[in-house]
Length: 196
Image (cartoon, rainbow, N blue to C red; front, side):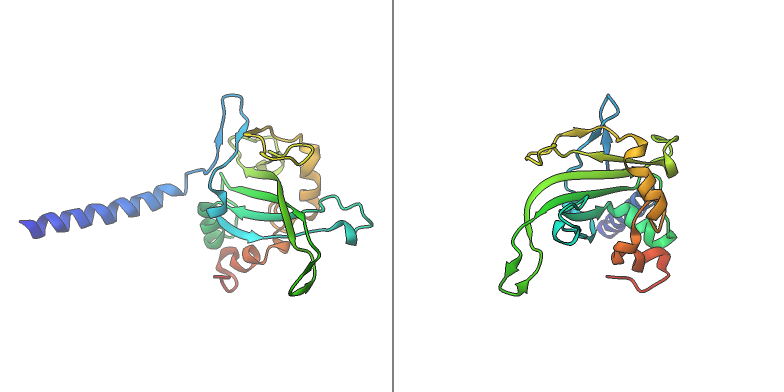
């Protein structure tokens, strides 16, 4: 009797996990408020880290459009889909955490080293929410204009002209600059060696 109960429990446990994995492809890892604004995602540093580009002022005549480090994360469900299918799924969210350029010297030598956290941005792909946006991507910023913390708890989508044109013109994959994120380019649809 005890053996049968144990077997039933294990069957239920494994079936529950399997069903959760199947259902998870429809899940989204973001929430919108009653006004349609994006609520700042929690726990994004536990998502899949895909890279940290920086275009410092020093290398751009003192006028870089984005002079800070960008720590970039993708939600784990969408990363799994990207690895399997080579495309960004409905409901993909990518987070960009802004970090100032701090010291330019360390015990390891000269370079660009991270300073302080100064902002947070996000992009979401959703035909349901953004049917009129190019490729159904919308862009958000929780950052304050003076880069002070804490960041705002919600964010409104940017007008299309603010971000979409640059992404359409130069992004390698569906509005995403995968060419600058080797974690994504190496994992795309299982075509190349997996980074992990």
